[in-house]
Image 1 (cartoon, rainbow, N blue to C red):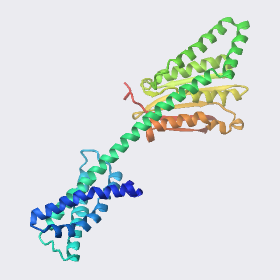
Image 2: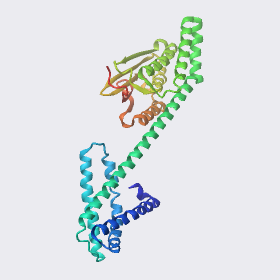
Image 3: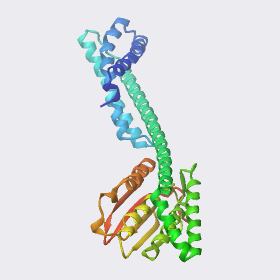
Image 4: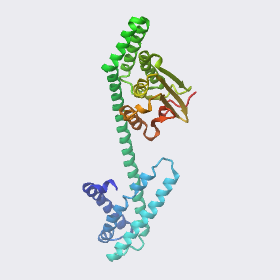
Length: 346
């Protein structure tokens, strides 16, 4: 339904706008053909009332066929609709009103036709302007929501990194290594500090190159690899040209976290985590695969982490990006694709 028709106040305001238009049409009819003021008002008042609703129909056309200048088919269609639905309608209503009220309008069909066509085109232009303004506001709202979600993702990542369970496991591993291998214990301390420092460095950055995002994921996996040892194998395949694609910051962290928490941690013999990125026709496609125990996988695999990433992609890119997740041939795969904003690879 047209937005004006859903509110009585909007409809009343819209009809009030037609009062000066009616006065203008009466003046033009009087000045062009010597038609009496009273006759012109009696004929054009009901004609304008009906035609006011007819001029709301461009809203439906404008929504279906957005105007991307120069767009000859759309412009031609608007002119044809304006001539048929605008000019002929107003001329026909004016003729019918003149016949009903015994106010002949002979010789003024061309005038009414021209005025009806111009008013219909003016209505279409105003509808395009309103829809364009609405689209701009929606884009601004999506951008604001994307910034909010990015900040929330940073907070969630920091919350995870300082999570007592995470720090407990890390410190426990460091303590165990300190008596067996001091060098590895010191290495784990350095890696843990670097991970926290890198995440804190994203405080004011909403988007980063994929190579930086991958570095954060590696930092997290390096810390976990010290804890799991040979039980966790990490494989990475990044096609040339993908590294400079701009992605939302901390986009991959919830995914690799899920791969460890719901995959490797549940396997006594351990398993692998694979990260791959490839460039396809202006898009970057990222796949994260991991070994998992099918009997232990529950609804947590589709929990807040994946939902959060999917929501961020939808807000930032709309239908141009997407995320798919699920078991596939013995591995759990998360596949996401999004536009490569850095352009085509070298």
